[in-house]
Length: 358
Image 1 (cartoon, rainbow, N blue to C red):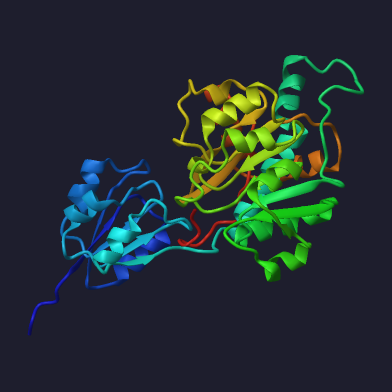
Image 2: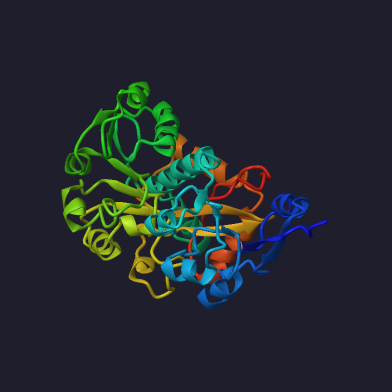
């Protein structure tokens, strides 16, 4: 009887128990795992993938020609625990006949809820208000103190009306948004009909929107899309939210727009790099909130910081309630205090299956 040929699978991170069990059930698989919650160094990835038939990776693992060469001819499948695939050299992978698996739609609701939480927190300036309560800055009711802008009768622009963009619009509509705009590679009339959303050019969206949410994929066409020209077209009272990828935004241009008051505020779930260095200029601004990630039971939980001129109201109450329901609130608060950051709004779902990753 011929011996069973074992197929080597290399896993670049500790993964949820469900995933380990699924791999263990495959009798013809020999699994090797980078046993850490931290990203695998490039040299270790090259070593681990050598001779592998399958690679299970994360969005922080850059699988380029060098890694593919290190893997060799055996590599037939790459599976990434992410919706985006911008970390994979797809052209090179296609040349080699390697199949790619990814996890679309598993975090649509979660990411949309995060985007709304981040927007509300940003426009209502909640973290700064909490800090004022703590440090004694709140002395009395003041008509103009911490005032801001609401969603009622506003115009919301969404860059990328895909699954997540639609889910964001669906959640924002009940807040009384008057008008939705969107931009992308092409009009999507069927998807836009639900929100009576108008397809416009990117410059038009920048100029007309009170709130802008970036929800597009990172591609050569979208890299650096939100730059100095984009921010110059925005209203001075506009709020900018990015839940896409950090490289869609020119962060130097964003810093200048925020520091000069050209735009009101920004809430960032994603940055470049991640995490930002502690001395990064964006971290010095009160009107900009960078995001962090929390790890719990193997699930990467997105969390966002947001600052913005805000006042009390139903939107602030919703954002606060979203924060309070998170069982990771205390951990997040502790982290931010240790890092000298403001309080955060966490977006946490129930314990998930091994597929639920971003």
